[in-house]
Image: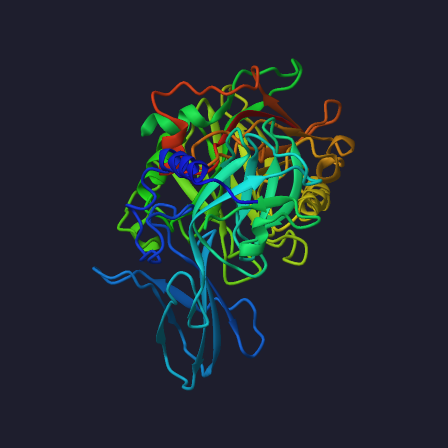
Length: 222
Length: 293
């Protein structure tokens, strides 16, 4: 299902009204496709998860380093820095992440690693939708849910939801959405705050056509 | 800014006490402070908490991102240095989480007498459960609450437990943590002859029978069940923040959560959108607590 251009423009206007300062406060450099990013909390630190090649999943021996003045690249300082493979997963917004694997061959008192830029996975720039209206359907996938409350769940262990409300057509206009293979997890409530379901929406082009069993239709413009 | 926290807190005012018992009363606020210490909103958050502290005695906080009070310069990298609220001390948990993403629990408590009530920290328990059961195992602090309004002061003890439940990919995980709190509640009720309050962000409504069905059959109550989380535009969205409290009318110890109407007392000259942008994606929940023992 394709959306007509004027409807997409209307969705973008709604977003501009809801989040007037999201882009202005951005401390990390937005991907070139984006002029603003939904869920970019005002100068929040990115969330960095590190697992080690040795199998340790919850490595916490690091400190986040703010970007040096005039730059937009965050870093971490690992103390001490053991020779290991460091697998970094960074969450900048609920819809914008990156990852990087660093093989550090030394044992040092400390080391500084730069974080991968938003939208970069394994050194590869991912597809990013500058505007990405999501239409919220009911659990059977038949009826839209006007004014639905939706908790978007960032993709890291322990995250808290980022909540938005759909408009009367069940549409939530998202900005700066990175394509991810598994889609994005959501929890949906109706306009009376009654729980409907936990689900997800996909971000590849095929998801523009509702798939059997899909509960939420994502309809990226093209 | 200073009026914001007061206006957004759910005020449960007024007291209805059993006539026969002398009660020890204090006011508690629970607040998810949205990545407290890791955002540029930190100064606003610190000021909001300081403002709220003027009319409360215990502040239970979730999403604390530092091992010490985040408003102190030594505990943040945001150039913020706001002291502890006047006449308050700070108790904190160890780091909580199953991954590199960790949070802390933080409890501010009043050290001076207010309304003839003196609060004293008696102890802490940061081993109430494990990460096998909870994403962030709850943290408990035990307080003595003394009523000095008469010539014969009387004290009651109370456990205050802080919880920030998992959100995760599905409702079942959230319900499981709410249900698992039963064991902690019963454990604490059996210790020290004290009452228990478990306050925080549960990520499920208080009327979720799967998560909280145990409450009614364990001498406990859960309240309030009002919308506390906020959308990005500041609209109330879900009833996620509540407290479970000892509720035993026949046999002390017991807790009465005083309440007048249970509706929002949002009267400040500001907007919820501003609160959402500048302070948190949750409103606080505030109640007057009366202990009998």
